[in-house]
Structure formats: structure tokens, C-alpha cells
Image (spheres, one colour):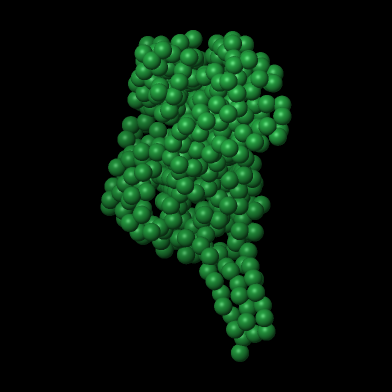
Length: 454
């Protein structure tokens, strides 16, 4: 497997891939090691994760540079991801005890009823390239803390980062047989699911999620699918236009638009539409593209070269149907996987750019007459990940967001994730939850105790 730099095309490293034979060996070792890991006192598992946290802090710059080199994430954003991961680790460390604590639900004379929680066993975690620390730790940290072993397949586009994560966890005290990196592409991921794992936790596209669901359903194992989104934001007429334009532009173009909760559709009240578009363009034209290792660069290369063609097709389809291209719209530069920050207006829902996930630096802005039209358009999608509203009136925002079918609701903010709140999708955005106590509970299974004393 060849790892290349998306900004330059340079070969970074070649890594041997797993195959059916190596996967079978790794699984058997993990199966044996998991039992001993689960029997350890929780405090020992917590100590290993705290050690991992300290290693992330001490090696932050090296890890950030590595992430930027293989993914193309601008270096300041890579550092931000490493720093932001610490709060998630703290949340899991502080709250795992309440997830694992046995609960007495009934006592009457000699009869006692209790509920305990046990780990699933060996799980498969097929992870992502766009936020390997954020998204990865959402799964493998609570999985490890609750006593599971993890077969961890990082994306082939973030393989070096995946190996670095594994090395740090092992150095921190997690046995190599308990956290096991799996190297390879989608074919290896499919082979991984042929193993008798007790759960599969996947983050990625809707198309791949559907294939994984078919494979996992044959054995009735725990399955969690964190898929994409076509995340809408509605800007009402009562806002500070310049401030909201800057906020939503950041929500749309941060990480070069490569985020499942990046703003992908903007609906703007007709009373401020022209002013908003002008301010939005002003912000976008000020975003610097270029070498992602430079501190002042905001837009880096796309991690996956094929996505450039997806964006080109969305732009061409929109223009053919009457959209107005205000900036961008094409590949940028003669080298590297760059695409210009792109803004389209006069868009509608027959255009792919307003219906299909873009996952790049592109946004469509549509004029609406008011709240009712905005709600109808926000709900006109097969996805249901996030939705946002900008208005000065909280009651109005709550009323609109209650009517929108999405797992996360944003008032006067966007593109935000908190470890205290569940990250969950509806429709084509997936099933299950990560983060919060609900997300941690995904890695345990209850046992009912009926205890009658003699």
C-alpha cells in the first residue's frame, strides 16, 4: 500500500497490507488477550489511557506534522484536532465508571434483581481519514476502557497516523494483542468483517455503510454506522449578517470541507440574501489555499484525488441547470489535489450540489421566503445528521429545529461536536450513537441477575 502526500504527490511510505491469514492470526490473539484485559481493574485500563493522553500532549507536533503529510489537513487544523481530542479522552475517563457500575433495580425479601454490564469481546473498528483522532478515539477509547479488544483498521489514507496511534497506545500500556492495527483498503475491511467479531463500528460513506450492514446482519452482531450528511443551515433575516456569513463560511470550508458535519447547504432569508452573499464571498475570498504545512493556510488539498471529479461534476450539473458560479469551480494549480473554494447561487434541489454529499470546498446558497420554506427544504434529503439555524430568537430557533429531522441541532453555531452529547444520525446518516454516556454504552451488553438467597 503506497502512502502519498496529497499536496505534492510524493511517496511517503509503502506499507504491507493484511490478508486473510494475518487477520485470522491477529483475531485469535485478540480473542485470548481480551479476556485478561477485561478482568483487569478499571483503574488499570484508565491508567493506560491517561498515559496515552500524556503521549499525545508530548508528541503533539510530530503527530500533527504526520497527519498533515498524509491527509493534507492544514497544520493549524491538525494541531487543533490533536488538542481537541484531549477533552474527549477526559470525558471518557471521567464517565466510564458510571457506565460499568452494576445497578440494583429490585429487592424484596430474599429476591434481588441486578443489572451488570459486560464487554462485547473483540470488535472491529473501521475508521476514517478526515478526523482520525476525533472520530477514532470516539470508538476505540470507550471500547478499551469497557474491556473490549479492538481490531482497528484506519483508513488507507491515514494509515501512518493509524500506526502512530497504535504505537502510542502500546507504549501507554495497552497490550499489542488488545489494540491491533489492521492495514489495507476496502478489500481488507471486508475480510475483517468475515471474522467472528462481536461488533463492527464504522465511520465513512453511506455506500460503504450499506455494504457493511449487509455483511454484519448475517450474524446479528452489534453494529454502528456513522455515515455522511448533507447538512443544512438556515439564516433568518434578524441576524448580524457579516458575523453569520463568517461563521457559516468557516462551517462550510473548515478542513477543506471534508467533514460529515460541514455545512453543505445554505438557505438565506430573502430580506438579507444579497447582503449575505456579498459578505460570504468576502470571507471565502480571504481564505488562503496552499501548502498545508504553512501556519497561515486555511484550505489544503483534498485527501482523495477522485473527489475532485465529484466536485467538478456537481459544478457542471449546477451551471447547466441555471446556477451562478460566484467563485472557484475547478481544480487549482498544476500539482497536488487542490480544488478552488467554490460558491454557487441560484441553486435548487434538482441539482446534485444540493442533494448529494460534496465533501469538499463547495457550497450552494439558496434564497427562501421564510421559515416554512426553509424547513421544507432542510427536510428534503435522505440524510439526517445535523441542521442549524441562525436567528436572535431562541423560541423561533427551537421551533424550526424541532421540525427538522436531524440528530444534532445547532442554534447560532454549526460544525460542532461535544463529548457530552450523542453524535447520531438519521436516515442515510447512519445508526447508533458515539460520544456521551449513550455512545459508551454501545460497547457493553447487559446481563440480568435474579438472585434469591436461601
